[in-house]
Image (tube, rainbow, N blue to C red; front, side, top):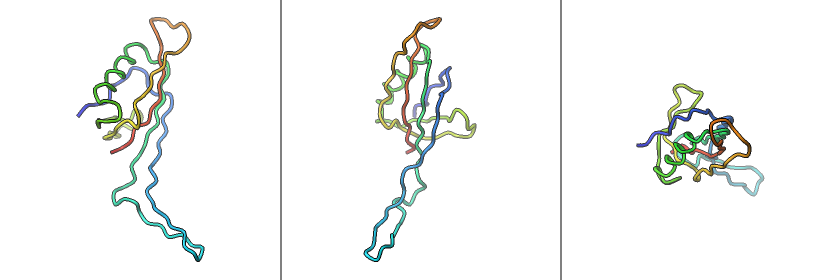
Length: 119
């Protein structure tokens, strides 16, 4: 199984969400009946935003996305803040990497944001 590359620039934004794990039905009497959608715990989603990635980081990320074929394959991702946080994830959709405007010392700068979904 592939491991998400260690980029020299940490993400500037990280947010965690959980998938909706309940089903609900409205009853004629006005109350709502709910139940779990799954027997497993709710899966997490992480939204990550990167800015000012250098050319090397952009190449690492792009090559990695090609290797795991975007949202097709699963891989290991280590949370950059939570030391014990290692998760099996996939991309929700393939990341788009954008060239940033401006002149920077030592090469181009890139930005991207993407969502990782726990499997």
